[in-house]
Length: 140
Image 1 (spheres, one colour):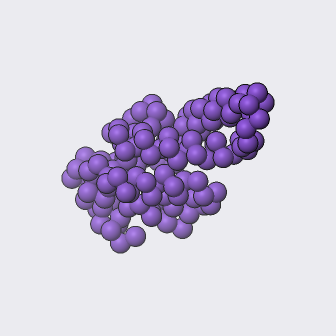
Image 2 (cartoon, rainbow, N blue to C red):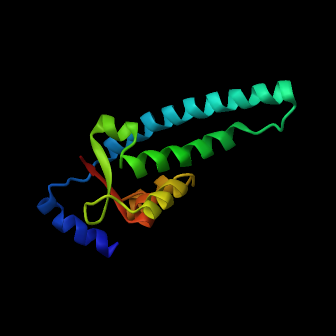
């Protein structure tokens, strides 16, 4: 937490502004809709194989959570943005304002699966995946 207070005091020198809760909510809605569509079509394809080839039935939530981790990991590790962040003109950076390391993106992506992730905002002034990975979402 101490490092982020230091980051906030110097962010004006780098020209970076933290995004607000409304922007983050918009990112979440857009990205969740895309994740749902991808996972739904993956699930339907799996159901086809299950019906015709008698393969193992896999519940939809496995597809959803798996798609979520892969979606965030690929987009944020390659572009530092997801489609939701592109639309809101924001990106993910480390505390120095640079591209985060790949392991930080992996931590971010995995922790997002936890249902309690967003409930840390009142206590940490950020989500758990931002706090644990040492990253922040700023205006691009």
